[in-house]
Length: 281
Length: 359
Ligand SMILES: Cc1cc2nc3c(=O)[nH]c(=O)nc-3n(C[C@H](O)[C@H](O)[C@H](O)COP(=O)(O)OP(=O)(O)OC[C@H]3O[C@@H](n4cnc5c(N)ncnc54)[C@H](O)[C@@H]3O)c2cc1C
Ligand SMILES: Cc1cc2nc3c(=O)[nH]c(=O)nc-3n(C[C@H](O)[C@H](O)[C@H](O)COP(=O)(O)OP(=O)(O)OC[C@H]3O[C@@H](n4cnc5c(N)ncnc54)[C@H](O)[C@@H]3O)c2cc1C
Image 1 (tube, each protein chain N blue to C red):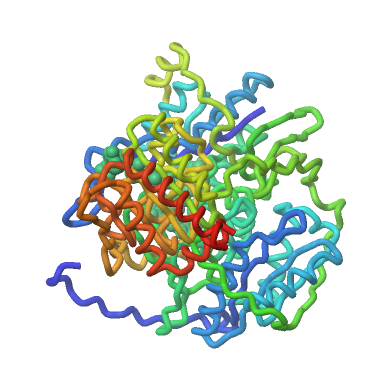
Image 2 (image 1 turned 30 degrees about the vertical axis):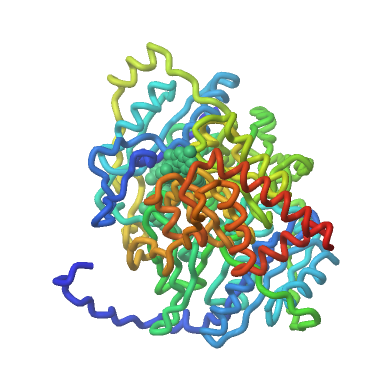
């Protein structure tokens, strides 16, 4: 079993603040973390290794600082880490990102044949959920998105059975290995790294691939050049033209406020009045 | 933009002549177990506006099992489609990535639409990402606004960035089709026009079951009986961290019961475990469009706002007169939610009882 897990380093969104006056993002001092959704992918790959043996390779495309995310992945028990980093990757949209990652995974496959590729459901910054499907199509792997449970892996038979979250229920799917799985959040719980793994994480040698090492010749397929989507402008959401109509009463009593509010809604919002009438009737 | 910034000249843009042949706006009609997902109708409503701006036709795309698709096409006409592309095949019985990607890609290559919209659902996102990669075109995710830049006939798609604190507009200039996904309930439901008709263009899919590697072994429908159904609720009462203690959240349930409403919550309330995840309203939860949304002890952070600002009437109860929620609610009451919630419960109870007696 050889699983490749794709992780992305993202700013800890819980700590992002927008400057109240300039409305710009205040990124200074915001810690970078492994995209939380990717931990479910990593844990699932580690569980497969626990059960079937083999190895787990973790890969990210990003700036040199993304090394920290990879080392964190090692501390949980990953075997190998690869940082795909090159100035030429800058400005990539999902199409260019999946192109670069697919090339790197093909390269990994040359030395250690890959059984499974895992990604998270989506990231918390770009938040598109498009990179997983993109990699699968480029590598011609069967695509299993929103997987809530890996029910069974039959390595000898070369099949995998999973439960996939659909809109109104759960699909049980069986497909052939190798395949690409995007893991749903809450599907497992990340283990605590063992002490030996934590020690190893600090010392382990990082494999760093630039564009050429990742097997990419055509620079028009990566970075800004390889990205069909262009961000035209960034702006702050506009406030509604009018602010709330404040409801007050002379007595200041809650009961009177409630009655006053209901009377005012009835006057201005016939749809709400009709809805209430429906409920009464 | 600051005043001294140089005036940006509009970049001259010539569409590749091969791409200029791409015409029309398409909406993927998503269905599962014989039910069309309402997001498809919402997208037809939005697609109608785009098609009219461009002066082109609006088409629904139906991929289904033999005999299944016709009624979906008729519905699509009622919601504004001029025509439907219908592809029926036994391999399209359940949603699976391979046959659907193949079918959609083939339709796009044959009939060449300039815009293709899909719902940002588990099915729509699975398909959109695959189709965009196969066609090597741009895909903008989770859009909250779509319009046409008439200078160059390009789709301008607006989406939230950085957890919703900012918006950005994304274009896909020299690629066709321009693809975008939109979450359910972000766009309003268009008026249904009974008896409206359209053309159906049937197209076969030459794909045998034996060539498809992934098999559907089973489908376990969700038990929806006890599941909250926020996206389609007409009245929602939501509570936030301002309620301070989980016991106090009972006041939200009490008001909701009297109103026959669903209960919603802000993220911190969900994270504290007071209510289940399915009740979270906002950027990383559900998008809702009720007729009445009552928010008690919710500050009105942008990530909450994007999930509920489509409500017809928003009532905010907050003890801080400067809370951001008063910037976009329709009615505001400055006061203690712990007193106002029970007062509202009583007042609505009486109103409904009076209406019942009268009615
Ligand atoms: C605010 C914002 C909005 C954007 N909107 C769009 C858009 O609408 N369309 C578009 O095409 N691009 C968009 N982009 C660009 C896009 O975010 C980048 O291409 C990004 O590198 C990958 O997309 P994602 O973060 O959405 O990942 P997702 O597709 O959400 O990620 C899914 C999974 O893929 C894996 N993965 C993703 N990125 C990497 C990586 N760099 N290294 C290793 N594994 C990875 C992870 O396992 C992750 O869980 C946007 C970027 C930003 C910052
Ligand atoms: C990436 C990202 C995604 C997010 N997604 C979501 C999301 O989907 N949904 C969401 O809701 N949030 C989301 N958030 C969090 C969001 O930024 C806010 O932190 C959150 O909405 C605040 O919740 P709140 O209003 O309940 O709590 P608070 O901000 O703590 O506000 C509590 C409010 O209650 C008022 N109050 C206090 N006591 C009383 C009282 N006795 N009576 C009346 N009012 C009182 C206070 O004045 C205050 O305004 C997200 C954040 C990020 C970064």
